[in-house]
Length: 376
Image: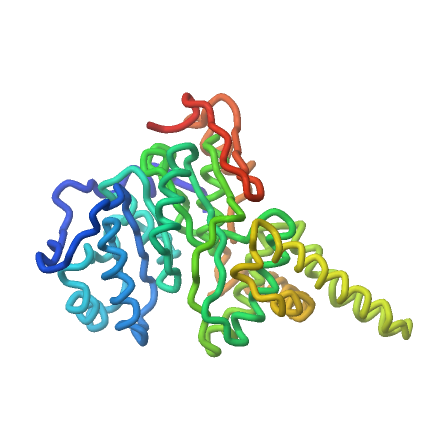
């Protein structure tokens, strides 16, 4: 489906007159409250951890303005409204917006309602502390989008398993998009992003790049993420493999795992598999040690990399087969994410004269970006 900026961008609601729940007068505000907005899109209906999430929102609201865009049905929506009254702005997605990605619709609504230029976008399992918020705030003075590094805490076995993925991605430049932070003016100027893709975070990153804006992926900016439950972990296996359909290099590597394993076994050379496993652990260890990662990633997590890689090799074939057979999750033909080249063509009438992507290297402070390239 073509990305219609008139439909998905210009229809965003204005912040003026938006419903807002006043802050609790008994809550003690932080002495140096940050001029930032925090958008939490809720696309699901589960509120099993409502008390824990409410505690996080209470602490978060002392530092930044928080908007929860809640797509829950009426009953859980009412429970959320009662729990968060006086803490955050709690709204449903803008009904004028249309799209099949519920999280993206929540992001489009929340960013439009934001009252500050710097906006953090994070799911219900992400836990920012004040230090991370301040770091993101500083980076957004220089770039248009920031992609921090997640780490699981606590770390039960599903988190250990998925940390293998995090470490391998860190070794090759950065983890796949999770929570993001954007400049609101840039987001609105480029017309938001397509809410009809499966992988919304990657679509947003690529749209910002296609627009010609500056991005940063600081390996040293760690943000805690709560681990998935065992049930959710199992549901995510093939779904996560769909992400690689939008990244050909990772897809080819994943699809090669099973044939390579079968060839080694057929040749009766198990030593090749052992050496491949050791090499995978070594690469993961490089990712673990990058930018002081040893402080948040325990040493044993590097051992999860071969396990995760073998699982991804299986799930990549399952995802590709389902895509070819049904057209994708839910038997539709939605793209996983558009390519940067395709987005650049669609944004040609808005894009600056040349492209600029600022990568914040390991442990280094971000270099200044040209002032004429950053939205005011």
